[in-house]
Image 1 (cartoon, helix red, strand yellow):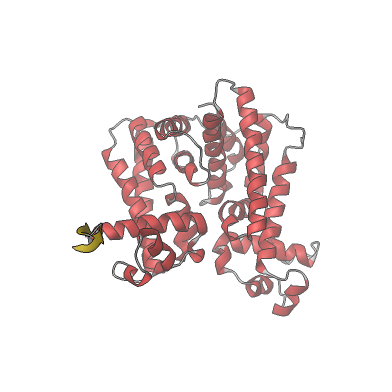
Image 2 (cartoon, rainbow, N blue to C red):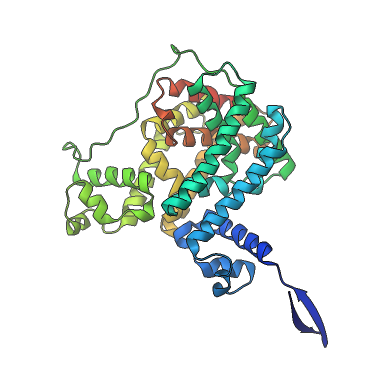
Length: 393
């Protein structure tokens, strides 16, 4: 179909996108916006404006914003499935293809982990099943290359490999795409080839179990711990102050004596996480070693997995000033890792070092939060092995 416009006194036919092309445009725009701002902060009008149409026109393609989110996730999974299907047999070829897909759709991992929960049961189950099928096929390919891994080790290695490939969703590195894809491939292949430690290596680290009624805590501390657990489990937007108060046996109005808004609790959670990250390695003069940075990050992630979940997923819900402050602190912590890595490996450029650092941290972020991998008896030693495989890639 075409529209006619006047240009320089002449009529020019401008072709309109077909229905399928427009649907793809809307899905791609929605994916970018949901990734950057979060599902609840994006309107249909925002998405429509991004592709140059009116908000009512969106309804010709998607019945509501939830359907648009489903379309955004589905379009990303199509990119990943295509990369998988087109990859040649060696595992390295598959990893390279998936690295390219990860850079093409940097939003997908965040949408799956943070936004999928907003869909209704049937749609969520369908998309989760499609992703689970992709993970199963990846596992089969890794199993062929690594027959030495037992079932639990295979799940851990595949999770870490996919976290490595998905790390661009958490931090952007200014690097030409072919080089970026190459470094992601190197890192993910290194993960896939990692030999797991023997069962007698390393010391297990138990995850913190929060007792919301712990009488040794102040009421404010109880509320903060409870908020962290609920934000981690359900997402910030789905939790109310009343939910938090009820979990500690506190009536609605009483909570305002401690926190006047839900965002205050979120800010307190991020301040707690930032403080723990800053103090975990016990050295503030910038000379901390890469090994110590990795060790402290792993231990903190395993011991405070709920806090890590909030720290990784909920920054978009912080008030602007707090978000800028947290972003600055996170950037400084990343720089600390990059500097330590370049001291270890002076041949690396800053950009390639940053790719490896984001990938190494992504492994910890995902393994401690996803499923039950954090309960493995030697998870600290295993994570240490995987993280260093990436940093040495």
